[in-house]
Length: 444
Image (cartoon, rainbow, N blue to C red; front, side, top):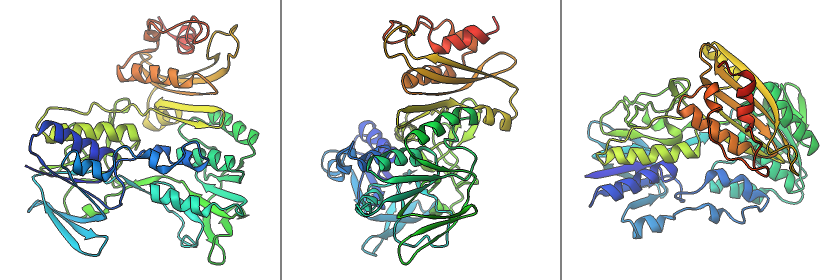
């Protein structure tokens, strides 16, 4: 049995390892357009200020390990240009310029996603960067010289906020440009105001309701041109989002969403026989929305890749879905969300209720108690949990994971009161903040 995997990172190599474990003698070939396998992309921002000492620390398994220890034909510098679904062939071009062709019995598409570059005019100037791969980060680090004083970050999502913090830690003046009215769009606007306050405390310049139209400079970027004026800068980081890397699938008959994500079923199968997809290039079933969604995160990529490998090995291993849980650090704030927020609920036509609470993350009388801000969305007719957003300096990660587990199990607001959660004054109040929301608002 010949297994071919396109993509050598989280989803692809998670699948490869499951095939290796479950199919003795399997012939596994993986092809990667870059030259690095299996690394933690989410750790890239923290290399900038030295919290992580080197990009090498992010590599989980190198190419030689897959080749020598597991017998996987792990190829680098191989970019796939297309798939012949009738002949079951993958073809493309090597970095040397030579073409290649690989037959498969089962194929996994795990090509991830590429950063979006929405501004064309001046985008070829030096000093404009995206941060998605180790080589891209290393290019940024080489360009972030001592004479660079001002850095402009376009986009204020996960990467934009994390990069703002670490670039600021390098002694640079940081400007964040966001086309919407607030940053951290995973939150509703009132909770995002806490993020705005944290940005101001740390001298991060926020430029909101502003669209970038062009970049200007003499060979190197010097100005960002917007519909709200021009901004001088020494370096630009584009962090406006990513798009699935699936252009090479044109003409294959593989069904895609409007944004180019590969549509997969619960077993990570595509619309074409013997072809699977997983990770940032594929759709993800959202348990709360009860529909396919696209929320590309490293956790999901690893889970989908593992299950794709099991299904390709002949196992019955359905992907049960996501609830959209994410978390990020921004200076002294933790920002977390799971499920849907109020803005999503309105867009989806849910009849809902929303409840807010400010509470201490541990017993209020214990030294170091800090305030967190919580917003919960529930379905109106039965108070089934739909989502939560939490912002605060401490204790946020614990609560968002409890709520994500409750969402996965389709619990209601009153159900939170029955949870047997850990309590001691240094760790929690006698009623956890999530249970405090339920005590005030649950219909019993």
